[in-house]
Image (cartoon, rainbow, N blue to C red; front, side):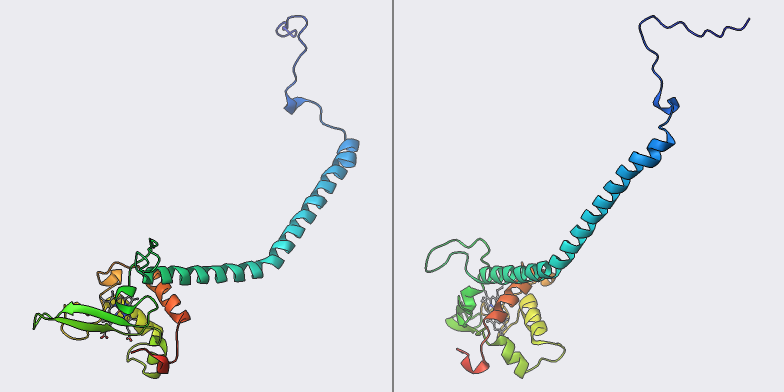
Length: 208
Ligand code: HEC
């Protein structure tokens, strides 16, 4: 005779039925309260998502404008700091971003004197760095061949440097762009130009 009794379970321990083979909920329950509960939750969450997307969408244009404005403002501020000396000559404050274009062009970029030793006569001479507050308007009036905009030419001058007399005399505009062996990244040079752009004057106002 076949053994149909199965293993004997110790008395007092109820049989545990695995979830997968327990009887399911009745159709009345599934299609009644359960369906209603799921539908209501679905509706509420869809409404919440729709509201979220709507609010995000309405706030997005002003968020983008504000972020762009903030980025430009930060760039100009950094540019001014790069331009200045590492130590403020008046207040003595430390400027950790200071690269010191001001050393030759002056703190306000109005142009400045560059004392140097003439490599041919070996005498002390006074060079001159140009006023950068008119540089944009100057190149609007005198476009440079091969450059689409004054900014392109100014960028190229800062990246490559420029000699005004005898190369290596110490009164040259040094090379700043990393592409040409200088210390500054494109971002830093762009920040400086962004700042220069905010302080431009008509060419007639040039100090030199
Ligand atoms: C060692 C002195 C010196 C330093 C430092 C210096 N420059 Fe110059 N810069 C010059 C001289 C000199 C010229 C003029 C070159 C020439 O004769 O065309 C010049 C020219 C320029 C010009 C072109 C101006 C024009 O009218 O065409 C720009 C722009 C400029 N410098 C920006 C900068 C920036 C930005 C920095 C800092 C990253 C800087 N310079 C640092 C000496 C200097």
